[in-house]
Length: 129
Image (cartoon, rainbow, N blue to C red; front, side):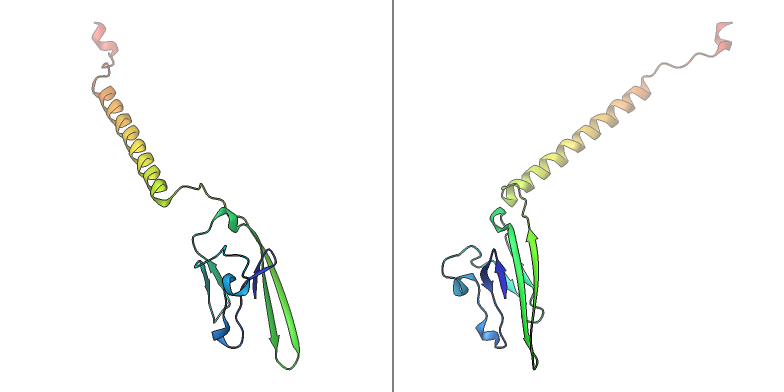
C-alpha cells in the first residue's frame, strides 16, 4: 500500500484486479488522477507530470503473510521543485540561451581574428639602422 501524507493512493493485493488509485482508495482526493503507474511485479510507484503539490511524505507499507504476518514500512520525503513553466516555454528559453551563447562566441572569434590581422608588426632592432 502506498500512502501520500497518510492518504492511501495505491494498493496491490494478492489479486491484481483489486488494484486501486487515489480515486478508488480515497474518494476525498483526486490529486493524482491518471498520473500514477504501479508496477505489479515490483510494487514500484511512478508519478507522472509531477507538480509542486506532490511534495510531501510518501509511505510504502508491505504486508506479507507466509504462515505469519510481517509488515515493513518505508517512508520517503519528496520535494518537487519546478519553475511552473510549460515544457514549450522551457524549450524556448533553452533555444534562446543557445542562440545567445553562439552569437557571443561568434562575435569573440571575429574580434580576435580581426585583431590578429590588424595588429601592428613588431619592429626589430635591425630596422633602426
